[in-house]
Image 1 (cartoon, rainbow, N blue to C red):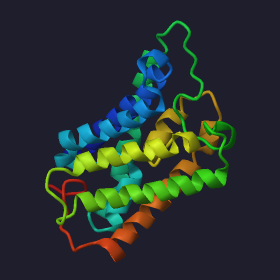
Image 2 (image 1 turned 180 degrees about the vertical axis):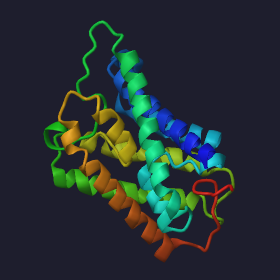
Image 3 (image 1 turned 135 degrees about the horizontal axis):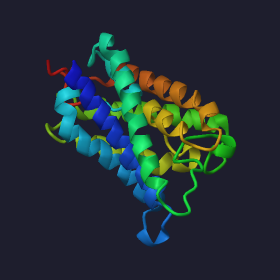
Image 4 (image 1 turned 180 degrees about the horizontal axis):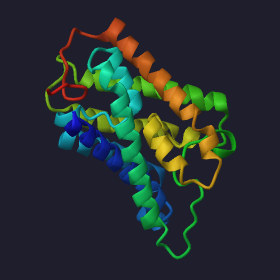
Length: 239
């Protein structure tokens, strides 16, 4: 169990450090050509690389919503849910802390939103709370279906991390203007603690919506789409 938690800790650290790091450190430099498209790919690449690196140890969740959805579909043990959530949140917080130390070394550094999520005044496009909740629920549900489908017995073996990473990239391309894209409560929590905005006061939305979305996606897969698969790479219990 300790190896699984360590893998989730490090994987979520990498997701926050790499994904949010691309937004905080690189997206503000137009000459690099990154902008929100580059940030979208950065988040997808963090999941892709860590799914291959440590997915065989922990299942490669790196996201409390993913763990919940996998538990609903009997791909993951309910008794391990809270320990996984703790490891994911702590790993994300360390990733944000390391990112803060690096970013604050710039001569004109300003924390600002620090890649945090938000709605209303904190939304990049000033989208409403309702728009943010709907986007996060729908996109997290879709993310779970991508994960469950690409790791099912019916899917080609060995390609799941690619599909999942590209799926997360697409999700960011859609929703960065709406919420700055969460679909991951651990990612939202990590950077909210460092933001100078009111991100912490809106954090509840980025726990509730992804968890609800994950539950919906899990139930859709389990009751409608599942081909009776056996667990694959993501969500597999290697013990």
